[in-house]
Image 1 (cartoon, rainbow, N blue to C red):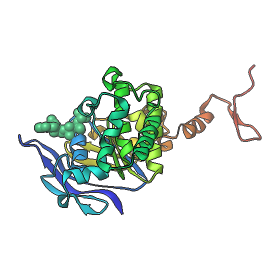
Image 2: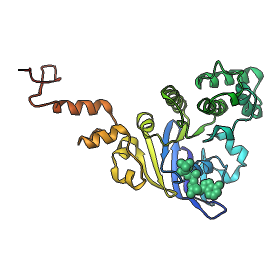
Image 3: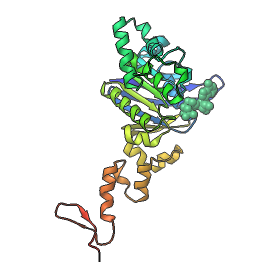
Image 4: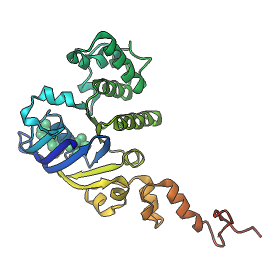
Length: 286
Ligand SMILES: Nc1ncnc2c1ncn2[C@@H]1O[C@H](COP(=O)(O)OP(=O)(O)OP(=O)(O)O)[C@@H](O)[C@H]1O
């Protein structure tokens, strides 16, 4: 059964903007999905409908099979953890430890369990040594990890990350990739919004492309990124590796850098040949 399921969901803002228009989408346990699309495509509105921050104008959202209309927003939020795009919309406690522990209070866990969850989430987010810091003294990229840890600590079955990669350096990107893997391996449904195509290509197996409030296409990352027409329709750039493969005329390698390298070896130059071990060799000089 899908942990999160949108069935023909539309959302119209009070001013009349139809931000989401007939979106159907299901994400199962242990599945990681990236939602990509241009600014204004409707990505954030879609995920806000998942956790009942917004109630759809029409259509149905089910979490673990249950229609969210039958639950309060607070009940839905217990099942769908949501890391906001802007960490400053989420942080209001005076220390990292208090911020991570804040949402846990309503779960009424014992002090030891609370402490253990705060520490584990902080470690996963690279904040194990920063528990006493005031989050507002930390750079934006680290504040993002504070909000990620706060949501990780809640251990919700569905996890939504809105732009986790924005402003991160390489170490931050690797940490986020590890974190998403851990969530997926733990059987959660993981939904990530990002503009970073290279991050998606390297780390997420399934991609949902949105444009003008609709799902343009949905499927394995390798297939979607090789689909130039769908990417163009959504006005998205291909990830570097897919673009390189297409330019070199070997699009069928998808996003597998190793496969791309293998396919390019015969093109090393005139006279290249395979040695007895099967490796391609350049001809002897002279
Ligand atoms: N509070 C709001 N009131 C009215 N219109 C809104 C509101 N929030 C978003 N919109 C509009 O809804 C549409 C979809 O916005 P949304 O933020 O869901 O897109 P997005 O794909 O997440 O964009 P971004 O990548 O810039 O975050 C846009 O036209 C946006 O201007």
